[in-house]
Amino acid sequence: MRVTRTHPGARALAGALLYVEHTKGVVFGEEVVIHAPGQPDRRGQVIEAGDAITVVQVLEDTFGLSPARAEIVLTGNTAHAPVGRELLGRTLNGVGQPIDDLPAPVGGALRPVYGRPMNPWRRVPPSDFIETGISAIDGLDTLVRGQKLPVFSGAGLPALELAAQIIDGARVAGTESFAVVFAGIGITARETRSFVERFRGSPVLARTVLYLNETRDPTIEQLLAPRYALAQAEHLAFDHGMHVLVVMADLSHYCETLRQIAAAREEVPGRRGYPGYMYTDLASLFERAGVLHDRGGSLTQLPILSMPDDDITHPIPDLTGYITEGQIVLSRTLHGQGIYPPIDVLPSLSRLMNAGIGVGKTAPVGKYHKDALL
Image (cartoon, rainbow, N blue to C red):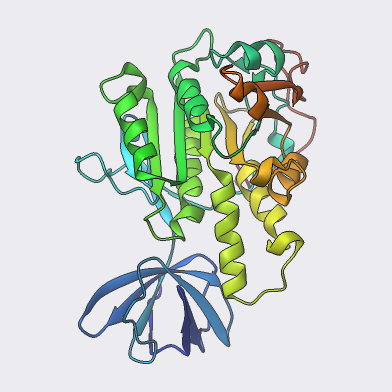
């Protein structure tokens, strides 16, 4: 049963972080409403739960917010996203609100944006591929259903153009039950217009959901946008039996937001200032891909990230490579020669491309509780 608790005043405000005292029973990810005299209500989310101190990430601008005079309402709800087939063809912002001048989606269900862990015993080894329409990927670094295959790019390289081309040309042979979910993370207004105009009026839009988070949006939405997209993808894949491709760009913006929040919380930094838990946080996104026994669908991920200074040993691509099954690397040299797409085939690989494409696999032998996990 949901219990709403109201706390008069907060201890401190640091940037977008609000510190609230004496919050028993608070849970991680709980939604918060912040009332301030003479100002519109603000939304927030619990990012650190504790009986003594709870940290709330404010989702709107905090200019003029007095923590001592604020009234913090803990709603008892965690973030849920409306999901369903009716969202296909829609363009939404990073938290699922419409930006296509259509009514807010009702959806067929509400799904927690942080998902549920996937039962390892129910995983089926990926085996069938998704055709992207790009020969360098389809022929050399095959994208397999249920796989997570990142694209390592760099500043100025056509990673978003490649993502748009994949969304436009991706298909699964022998089935019409295919959908694409795109999550734009910290993209510019120009890039947003480019995506919307490219797919407006196209038949591809009917099988695509766009979650577009822009640089001008609240920073915390960069952490939520891929999770809203994955909640929709999981529903289509595992509740409706569809084959879903999730394209996320740019994961580097996501990681930078993690670093900013960790710095605001005065956490002990890890490599190059990134939090030590960044590996775990990225895994909570990537490990939502897969194929499940007794479920007809699949969830495949194609995350795109920019390597700072084209450094493949940077913590973002380095940690991503430990979690995912290969990588597609874009070359600045090939791009300078006018070659498109500038995929460098030597450092690129797909570890599942020889997994027996087209050959069905059975689930591993073992017992699982049908209600415990996905």
